[in-house]
Length: 217
Ligand SMILES: O=C(CO)[C@H](O)[C@H](O)COP(=O)(O)O
Image (cartoon, rainbow, N blue to C red):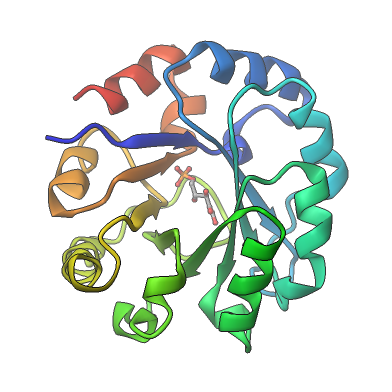
């Protein structure tokens, strides 16, 4: 089995100790920091924004994989670049001119990702797929950590990997929501190559070991 990229989600960390969380991730086998930005409009929850990302960046030694769960994300591309984003992912459902948004992200020197909600068909990505570095498939309804993984995600990963083999073989397929040591191997076998894990990592007794286990199963 191929070794996946592991991107622990800061959403599940102790917000009063984000420096500790960053140092733990620096020392772990995590590949990226996953940063969830929520606006209370696109999703029914508010997380944090640019100032908090900048503060974490000061202590981080790995790329920032920033997932925008906000409406019209094109308004803030430069701000997230300045805050420290290396990969910027926007929702297909939130950006009416997605092609332009993706080009703008790349023009700002970041890798470009598009995310889809559980109800959105991967087929809707076909025409934008050659332009993307990453697709993030939500395996829970976005807005909250700690939810149950939606099993239909496996079908979506298989369909998307087949599309990517044809249109964009280097595409990173990232899964976000309810990821744990039970579903991770099957996700990778289905074609995913990046896994976000929030609660499973940060609520475990030994987050560093949990990350190592996810990476090396
Ligand atoms: O994007 C998210 C929520 O919208 C979180 O990244 C995702 O839910 C991961 O958290 P957990 O691993 O606890 O499910």
